[in-house]
Image 1 (tube, rainbow, N blue to C red):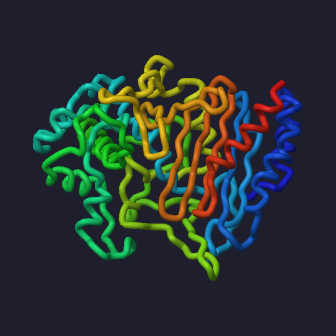
Image 2: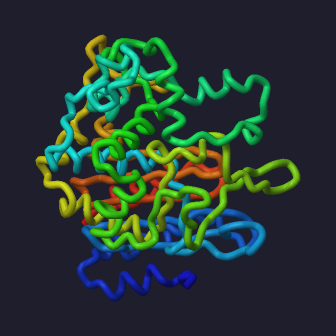
Length: 370
């Protein structure tokens, strides 16, 4: 059911423990996303949780241009790289179970993997210091001068096979930081090998079902369907074009989960209350990597990264966050644990910057703290 424009205000009034500043900011939050209001264009869904309470939850725009169904709190978006925090959690659960160790090597799990994988540990895969070749680059080289939508989709097992055909890493394991979708695809394959279950099944049994994230799933075309699905779009000169799938859209470990605002709120609660993993068990995920050859850097500058989370602060506020960027979708989750504030933005269009919008929301709270 689509929420009315006054939903957030009514909810706030029903929750007396929410501060006056949080109530007053509902209209201000709405104003930040006013440009996304539409009955015939893709948009976004916005969630704000403060002090453990949902204080803003609203959809803007439509799920697709065929049905023009309004986006609401139950609309499921492709998370893209926000998936990595769930993949990391799967690995951490296996470590907690005693079935895996962070310092286990890639060749300990996959004995047939070539020698260049022997120095690579599970920890390296989690914090992007593995040096694995980028599977996207390998695909592009295999299909030169071929439009992306004409390259056959690859799955996680196919990525592992591609990597097993390579002969060298990009750099020695642990020496540098380089964002790696390959690493997280391989982590999903490790989950399958160690648990004896499919990655999607492990997610369901160990994360989604316990947290009652009833409409969240790792999407596998032909095997399951996404309920209340939003489709990705790209703006062009003559309007919008649905751009929902690409050659890499079928991989799961690096970006294949779909979820909604309602289910993200449950995930946020699990992180806040340590429902799945204790504070101690979560600590490795929140410890910035220190490469052996020098500080972690990206083309955009210094990086602070744990397991599936960026960790650099924002204006002096402790932060754990991530972005998602894939064909037709842009997403972000911004968590400020010391401020008890989480802002999530899921968009099914590529002409918006969810991180910038989410941080504008955070600024409202930081500027009006009780």
